[in-house]
Image (cartoon, rainbow, N blue to C red; front, side, top):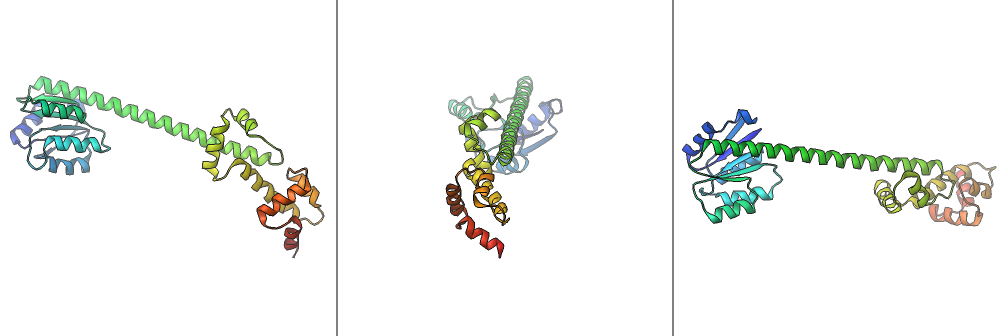
Length: 249
């Protein structure tokens, strides 16, 4: 883990370096900055997990730094170390979600107790984030797998008039969920997808001169030849016979 100490007073930084049991808490890299401006550069570059900061500093003060930290995606614990028991400072520390507020002169026991709690809290939140991420990944993977299975089922049963309710019952998902996710995965509705499969299969049958049009319609799931021809023309801009003549040339 990494930590950064931000204070314009060198002796305060040195004091924190000496008083904190860094290694005991798993912190092996400690950075230093003398003001908020320098700190933002180091924090952006190194992304430390623990941040100790003073409130009154030149260039960029602690309040501005806390506000900036709150606006970033950094996962860190910020501990304010201030010589001022000041309401405004404390209010801003709370507002921008500082982990704790320690007063100078620094008590070693309070410092290490606070550091221990901050590290523990960071680890708990990191574990929670990983668990949440794993759950989301598993959920997305499961949904994708379900859509693939549904697609395979439709391809295998394209000749049947499969309803959305039948698919929902078979795969234990809601009709609304299936409709939404299938369109996201395949960029078309289930009805359009099945129609496209039927028309592609119809083209294969039409390439065989001995297969009559009504037989083609029946083979791809249409009982009515006229309706099949209407759908085929809408899909290909040609009647079945026109398409067959182009294939025969």
